[in-house]
Image (cartoon, rainbow, N blue to C red; front, side, top):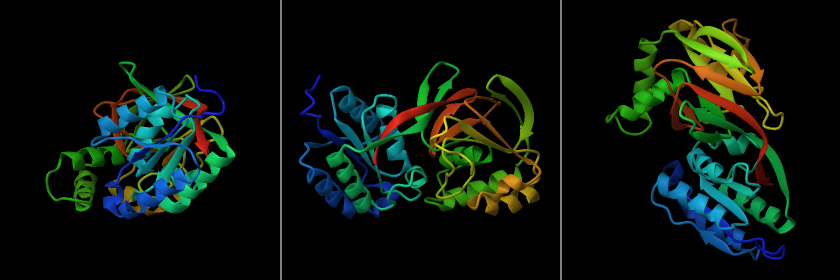
Length: 303
């Protein structure tokens, strides 16, 4: 254990390729801001997601006084796996394209202002607690997430896009969306909310700790990362035409007013369906079934 006068180094995970590298030039300034606190700053070596996750976990286990992740939602997501429930302060610096989790927490949306805010929090020892979601699969594997779990149409589109070799870049997702819209059909789900079982057919299922995914789509608009609960949005037996019509409303969160869209709130959500791989914080995760539990105050945020 370190004496109180030695809070431990600030471990920093940098992803210069996030957001297609558009914030790469800001990263030296990010490190300069953090070093201006007088704290030891250690940049974690990593050339892959697996290496990044291992480096974050090792840093926390070795006594890091804080962990800072600079990158997109995927980079932030990796950092969460290491600090969730530990009490180690976490700083999130947005350098991706969507940055949904950071924006929903009310943090600065650009790298240098975010680094300045984290540096100030380090100097002042300023933190706040926010909720995370803890997901467990059928084999007992655990993953934490901060934003949204997708387990319907959007997850299916991601699966198709990730299998495609052509076209490259964002157009791949456009092609995948069209292909899956042509195949759109409601699927049977079992949803268990705090022990109460619901059987339903749906094309869209999302579980949110915060409101947004996909770069500003307010899929779970009422989600609050400080209330100790998860919000669930289910789009039921929507036709292709109805689904296409409500999709633009997701950016404002007004899709929940559609008669075939249902919302729920619970501390624990069990989700079962055949042939669905979930995505959390935009990252491929566990196949269903999964159990998601709200973890109040599991993240100690530098803010």
